[in-house]
Amino acid sequence: MKFYMPTRLYCEKNCVSNHAKEIAGYGTHALIVTGKSSSRKNHSLDDVISALDTCSTSYTIYEGVEENPSVETVMDATCKGIECGADLVIGIGGGSALDAAKAVALMMKNPKKGWEFLYEQVEAQAYPVIAVPTTCGTGSEVTGVSVLTRHDLRTKISMKHKVFPDLALVDGRYLLSAPRKIIVNTSIDALAHLIESAVNTKADYYSLLNAIGGISLFRNARAYIDDMDENARSLDEDAALMLMEISAIAGIAIAQTGTSIPHALSYMLTYEAGIPHGPAVGRFLAGFLEHADSIRKKEILDAAGFESTKSLGEFINRLAPADADTELVERAVKGLLSNEAKLKTCPYHIDEEKLSLIAGL
Image (cartoon, rainbow, N blue to C red; front, side, top):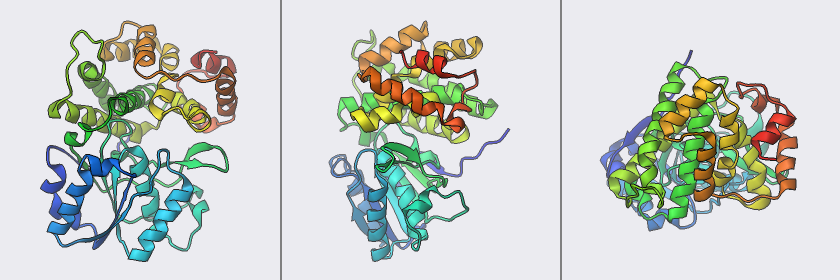
């Protein structure tokens, strides 16, 4: 049994400004890695700049991170970071920006290496990373994982190195300006993290405390993401912070176990069909849980407030549908059959027939 979570995590209103001095303590020049506009709209970028200015810490902004960031984007940002002499990377945004920030911090620290270094299984250091999440799904602010798009392979693959953020600053206010679809989609991703961590060969007492606890908290949050819930409510600061805390808890859970079958099946749907990550993962979640150990399955369904995996699947499909061609889903199944490492994360027997059932074929 083991538990490793080296990230210092704060979840509170005005989180960035509250910890300005701590931010400044990680470096002398920050490369801020973010997307094209959302961090300006929700004022998270303004908060980070203000905190850096307060402590007279210089910075350079890189705003080129796309959804599902590519290796090429990582290398472009790395060049900018090296040119400006940055010794600290601050990622602001959803999982794409945070994942990119981790990879950039690694490559900046190893400037003589080419992009292939991202996928070399060797010991390496990275510059400090500070994560400021603005969505409620990936939990990237508390994991060492960086999932990057490989155009050469036409899919998404995690880099081999683990780069945990040194500091994670979670503020629900940044979620309030996000489109409802983004909130829903990323919430489904967080639920997938929780369930895939609970139904996992690496699950243990510590990881399950987070996974089942996070699922129970998700049940309380359903009224804020489901307009058809009988107790549907409008999102406010407290509810937004709760959604982001669920995401962080889910991140802590998968930091111990990793993800499993639904995530592995989802990547081809996202790359080939442009289906957002949350719905793509959610498409396989009920089928994956259906074949789990009956005791664990009941524990998860009870915690989430669903009577059956069927009702869970209907909930996900209603909120975050993922329409994909049968041929594409079949290709995803075939591709996963050769991924022994990911298949081993599943705690029950898995073969082509079982994968086809999970995928709804």
